[in-house]
Each structure stands twice: as C-alpha cells, then as structure tokens.
Image (cartoon, rainbow, N blue to C red; front, side, top):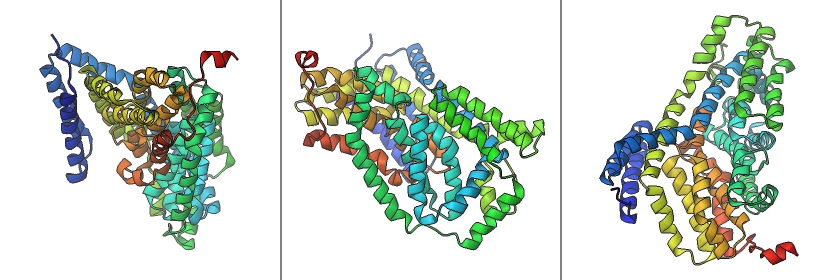
Length: 462
C-alpha cells in the first residue's frame, strides 16, 4: 500500500533537489541537464520509499513528457525557421534596415515595443522570440548592446502578448479553468500589467542611454557586408508577414511555422538564387553558414537549424519527466494543501496562489500545470472569502505564465535561452516585466487595489 507524502517529506525532497540544482549551476557552473537527471533519480528513489510501483513511476514519466510534445515540436520548427530565414535573406534584411534606423540609446525600448506589438497580434511569445526576437538580437549585437539586456527586452515584449492577447493560449486557459469571462480577465489584468510595463519602459530607457560599443564605421562596415552577400529586398519579408497574418487569424502554431519554413525556402530559391536542394537539407539540419567577411555579421547569421534546438529539447524532456514523477508521488498535492491551511484573508489567499504557481513552475518547468493545479486547488477558497475569481485568473497569469521564462529548465526558459543565445540566468535581471507582474499582484492583493468582491447571484441577476 502506498504511503502519503508528508509536508516534512515534501520539503526535504524539494530542499535536496534545489540544493543540487543551485550548487551545480552557480557553484560548479555546469549545464542543468545532468543535475536534473540526478534529481529525477532521487525523486524515483523517494517514490519507491513511498511504495509507488516502478511501472507507475515510468507511466508518470511518460505522462510528463506528453505535456511537452507540442512545445518540443515548436522548438524544433523554430530552429528550422531561423536557419531558413537566414538563408532566404529575411533576417539579414531586417538587420540591415534595423541598423539603418534604430539608434543604440533607443534600442532596448524599441525592441520592447516591437516585440510587444508582434506578440499582441500573434498571441505567442514563442513565435515572437523565434522570428522578430532573433532579428532584434542581431541588431543589438551589431550595435554593441549587452546581449543580456537585448534578450531581456525581447522576452519582456514577447511575454506581454502571451499575457494580454486574446489570441494567447494561456490568456484563454487561465480564465477558462476558473469560469471567468475572457475579456473580464484581460481588463482585470490591466491593474498589474500597466504599472509593471510602465516601470519596465522607464528602466529600459535609463539603461539604453549607456549601452553601445559600436562606432559609425563599424555599423557601415556591417551594412556593406550584408548588402554584398545578400539580396536585400522587400520580398524577403513576405514570409514573416504571412506567419504573423496566419497567427492573427488563429491558425495553429505548428502549421504556421511550417508555412514560414516553406515560404522561406521559396524565397531563398527565387530571391537569393539558392536552388541547391542538398544545401537546403544541410541548412535545415545544421543551420545556416556563410563567411561574409565581417566577424560580427558572421556571428549573427550563422545559426539556427534543427540541431541548434537539441540542447533545449533534451532539457525540456528531462524537466517534464521529473515533473511527472514529482506529481505522481504526491509532492505537488502536499505542497498545495499545506498552503491552503493558512488562508484567512484576501492578501494571504492571493499570495498563496501566486506562490503555488511559482512553485509548480519551478518543480515541473511547465506553465500550464502552474495555472491548472493552483487554479483548481484555490478556486473554492475565493468563493469562501468572497473574492472575485477574476483575481484568481489574474494571479495565475501573472505568476504562472510570466514566471516560466525565468526558470532555466522551464519550457519557455529553455526555448528563449537557446533561441536568443543568452542564458536565463543572464537575462533574468533585465526581465523586469516578468518579475514585476507577480510582485504587483501580491502587493495589490494585500493593499486591496484592483481587487473586487464576488457578486452575489441576486446582484448578477439584478
């Protein structure tokens, strides 16, 4: 007969795991894959101690992986899109015009707003980071901007739409599981989103004025290299334009990315004159490669490909497997139940919800679980304390959707780091919007700002 995980047992397991991960990443400075494998083995041993059968643990690993099948496919496709859009001249064209228009002191804020607009129209941070985000990172590199700052601006802008756009999966998912109207949810998000975003803009304005190492001569040399090696044409921008339009029309992400790949290949053939099918397959597999004569440009355009995403894919697979085991042995349920015992006030309730979403994110690396599990666990307590459920959906969005990119082994964190070429730990201090939002939702919960009471049934009918 299985044993039930106690609070002490849960805290011990989580403490051991976090000690391994933190020591490995910050002291030993190794990549997170093997430390997570060690944590997986420890969790399995703890599971056997609780008398959970090995077959059940294996099934839990598989169930954990099932959650990540779609993100893993998207990761692979985005790697291919990046390579193809380098070959087609799409990113080089964006890079050329970006260098001609954007000044270094305005780069961070420009990147923030550009990514915010694209993500709001597409509803996808993955699509935004994998397309316009890559181009903005290239522009930032050419301008001499610190990559961590550039990545922070890209991630903040991209995640704005993932949080606020009615086209976003998570923006629909959070209110959906607790029975809140989608547009009531979005309007309520403004209470925490507006101040968080305003502060983010101010901080990037302050940082941007001191960030540049490239001279006018350097930039001109890069423009010359791009112009000499690629056919820079408005036609190269048709592929990303089509991707944005399809995303706006709510086509599924995977088919949209496939369209981006196919149209990119057609562009490469007819605009760049690259009709070598064997080279197409090599680039799709291993990434784009070219010597332009400019070291900076080479570093920007020589990237992408399926293999470039294998680091992230393997990390996500390990993290989701670990999350499945931890959930199966009852660690998450015990953790959530322990937090429900001290819910005596509105502030404590909202703080506990946010803490739970963050905790599930850290333990499982999966943002949908960080919305689903706390949402179902705390829903009845919002009714009991007469707190409007739109506060629950807002908290789940702020602390679930936005925290995942701050976790190195999270699905979003692994994807952003691999795509942008900047470790999560490096861009984290500049991802202002992502950690300001959960802070605001907890602060406003205690202060009573933007927190309404649940209407009674009689009032709703009236």
